[in-house]
Length: 302
Image (cartoon, rainbow, N blue to C red; front, side):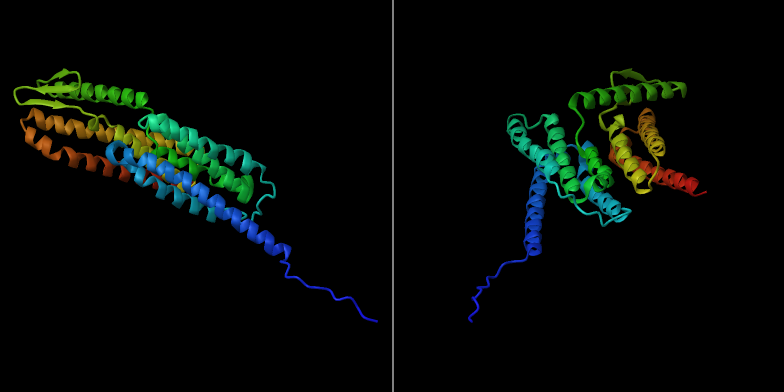
């Protein structure tokens, strides 16, 4: 009795098909995510280049990546299995991707509108969190929440708030310096943001002397060190307040020393040391924050 011949076909195992499908989805998702972040970098690169106030933006992506790697390595359960449902990925992440195109069209007509920066970064973050949730659930998304949100420190502030705060700081710095010089017995006069020091000339308190750059630098460093050393929420608020205070104090000291030299007839010295004083101010802020972070960390260990 002859037995029927069974033709064997090369059918791939279900596991192999699932792995190929998963690999394809990972590559596609990674490509889309990288693409939207490249669009964000392209949009912000011009501001980071021409505006010294936001030149720290070139460093922020590297800091975000470092914090993300550090947070991922310190997860309690790194073997979190990805959720089977892709509903969040397609609804949340897909909707964010679709909104990129109309936002970019608006950007073509208003390229210098700072709200476009916020919108693009927000959409990129929503897509990132959707991908993280799909890969490792809410646990992974929560773990990498701060490293992703930290990128906001590289986004320019709304122009109205930026200008109002800068002008307010310029007025406060110039009036405080004049009051201090008058107490020391020097004859100075204030006209707007310009300090007249007869008979030697005048010293202007410009945007660089307002202290806003030092404040932004202190915010970046305070937030980074606060997360790096795992400070509590209260400690991070206090640490940021300390950073802002150091920035204002360092800027006030810098502006006062320059104005004091002007009242003594050393106008050339003021112009020569203006930029160098700014670098010294930034260095003092960084050193002060590092020292304060070590004191807070030591207090936690004791």
